Image (cartoon, rainbow, N blue to C red; front, side):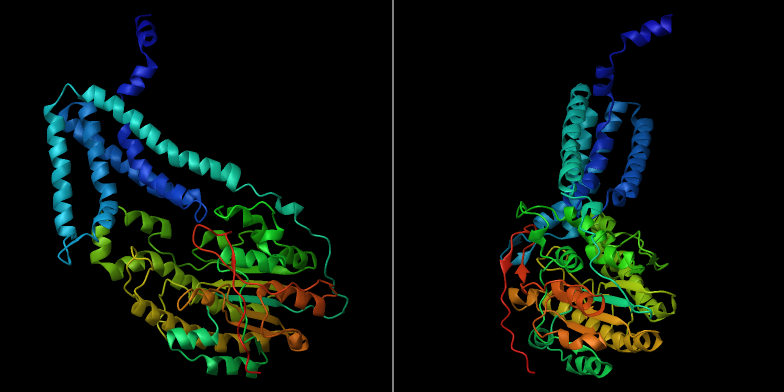
Length: 520
């Protein structure tokens, strides 16, 4: 009875206020906040391991400090100081690093670390000496940290319940039969090989000083049609591929798109597109390859090729560590730190290139979608396919300084050209029925002018249909041409239009006309 009476007298609200919960909330906040800021690019499970490690470390620090000072409230406040010291350092460094006096940078890790540590130690000494303020400060910190972490959580919830909710479910996307195959022979395998960010020959020469004409000539010798004036429809991957796989422009999906909306609502249009559904209904297996960009992988495809190699850190974890005290190590050991995160892209791409020539041996018709993150950054390939570390400044407007980025880009172009000229003939020779191959970029790059963002490599292998292609083609008309020519479809081609949109304003489109003049 005595125990029950004591329990009844305990005020749960007061217990929660006086218990030092703030160290754990503050330890989770930077991770949840970063997740919320990038929620349209990453999944929530990307943050799980980081949160667990952060909470476990915080628990350890709290218990050690409690053993040292015999006071939970003091231990909690000191633990929160340790958390702030660790997680805030990288952000302070980014904020202060550009400050200069008489033209010289004065913010260096060795100076900022000492100054920042002195501030934290001073606050810790003050807390140890002021016993009376600890209960009130504990309550304030609990309240403050609760409000603080509630904001990104609310943002994530809004995203999943509003921004991520598509206006139509995948099953509602038009899946009326558009194509058929009446021949007794096997239908052709279809390969859509996306070389991410690969620009047109004129841009490669004028901006990067690299001549890809020999590569294009060899493609022509293989039977490819090269569209010298091709442009992408959009300058963002998810917009471009969603449009291509649905044979429509983005504004046909919805009429009420806000300029600054997130892109995640496009997921069903990308994951379960009209093109994919039409081919699967015709008996095609869908074959895809893993990339570090998780939202661009069709995990429910018939076959998903995944390399066994993984980076020690995911892109999200690497980005998180750059905001913390670990920034010091990552900056001083730049080559090694790049391998912590970017090596996964190297392994995934190499694995895809190794497996592509083997796909013709898989029985039955196949729709192969290989989205290769090359020559797009990160630049991890040397000209012969060796792994390279190219220095970059992640806090600059561009990831790489111009000369470093140019070198990395040219390495990547040299390597992927060489590999395509090895792989494509093998696919063609090994295919029982002559295949259809699209070799194209999803977008370009604004280097040298915003118009270069849509000027892309586009080459097509479809022997009986090559004259259906034309020099100013855009990807929205790729599958209509193939379906009309091979699969008894009657799909109207759309006007070829190209749109630029800036980061964070994905649906604020500026049309870019095609001013290219082909040589043929």
